[in-house]
Length: 183
Image 1 (cartoon, rainbow, N blue to C red):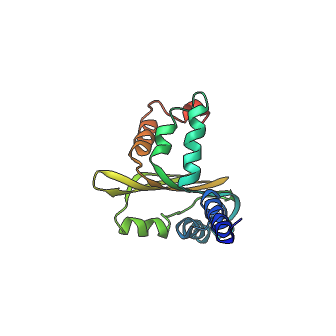
Image 2: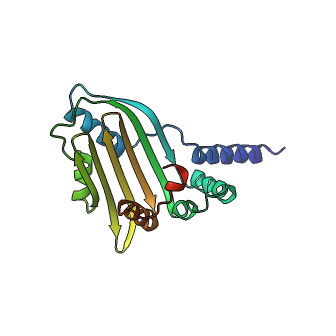
Image 3: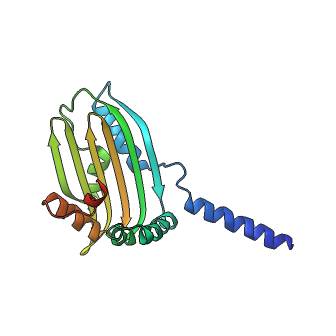
């Protein structure tokens, strides 16, 4: 076999594997939010449970899988608009959420033109959902959910209008696409 062809094939395989692999997640924004929350609550602990990053290749595979799974067809349109998703889930040990403030990383996003769509602050839970508008389009969302047992961070990019519409519908008590899957 021709040596340059082998090298090109190997390089192409490596690039495709890198694109398809979630690998290690390192997102400055996600880790910045976690770090800020840790600093606000001395003595708390945040143990990594899951950190994943899905790019266009894995999201495309998920769309294909949902095409053949019965009852998964409602999820497909939401995946169609996504181009990248980063997820961090951490087990937490927190005594209380005293005077918890919005993490500085989220405040920086607001200063950069992002908007808040949901803000919940209760004694045992804090939730922030921010989005970056682009005219009448939504291109990015950042979700933070914190309670005494878990911290969930999600950042998604793409054409996310349908995803935000579904979240608002769920908030208002409407039918949800996740409800059919136990979500």
